[in-house]
Image (cartoon, rainbow, N blue to C red; front, top):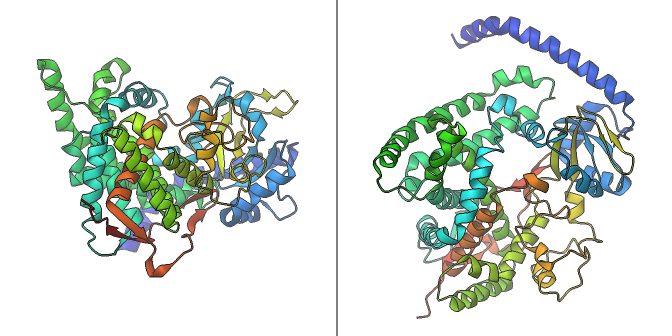
Length: 512
């Protein structure tokens, strides 16, 4: 019966699939002819055809970017990636490119290609959502930080549990729940953030997005118009959005009544968005979907960051003690209140976060952009319209000219640079550019230019608060006395902590 249904389904779609296939083949041929005429050198040109280069990229992207960095350090070159061919521009070109208008160097099209929005349905709205993060969320951090800290303290204890003896925990899964609830406190308020419907949607939506994108990118980009019909996660994403609209519809309606009747209003991201939704032409349904988009942008990346930090410090027990001592000292100076100023003063914690980000990039490349109009750089490099560009960041993170002894994890690296106890190899205008949240072309963990992650200030505060309460409440160790750091999961240019790894926790015994 299932085979018969599949046969009928395929025959119904056959004309459309054939049309897509013919169009795909035509685009592939035209693209191949253009690439042959390109004047940019091709990395790995002697290593086989595009399919072979693509397979090599899937398993050895970091080595390829390093090789490209060494060979073409100051010039643009072509690379075959999972997103087709890209022009990898040198670091020094970014100053010019970031200042060009969006109708020349387009951020939206470049990012949409990264997240396969054509198939996933993700909308890269750099307008309303980014405006809300900058204008309301970031500006509210001073006010909401104590609330966020209290939520982090409570949630860390609830999720990780009593741990009266050494207790192994699947770190990523537990932290994912912690981050979802703590983020949800600000996104939706104290009641909704603990509803299982929200926690499930905010975590699984991103999981299904990543699965769908990963499956799409396993195929050549010219086959994806056909392959999309055989990826079940793409249908699941549609269902996630439907459920989000159904979940939040009565909440939004109730809040609208309160707004109309002069009642008490919530102090969270949903309410801030509602206050400006009508003037920005944002529908109630889109408001619900934007909550999923916020989760996608914030929850998994924050969880990955905290997991990586824990993996970096759990094998360094002396560092755990030093971090805990700094936290206690700073909190003592602020009467135990975790204000934004108190978080700012935790410079060792900030340094560890940035060193972990340098050591564990989520991607070997950054600055994905679409060249909408021809670009000529000061050095004479000409990039034609219709091309996608990026820059290699993995090799930059390990460049000894920028980061002395780059293959050493130095928790004090940025602490000492900010305190001017080490010479500055980059010669920034101010040492504060070595903070975790600061974006520069040498530190693109949060992107670069005017489209750098607008939520990085919230993310930094949240990561610090979660780390603070983990360190204050628990001791950490590796299972079975292991002393080596866990390896990460790699697919192409993208990397992430292994979601199955375990860390052991034991409750810190009170000395009072």
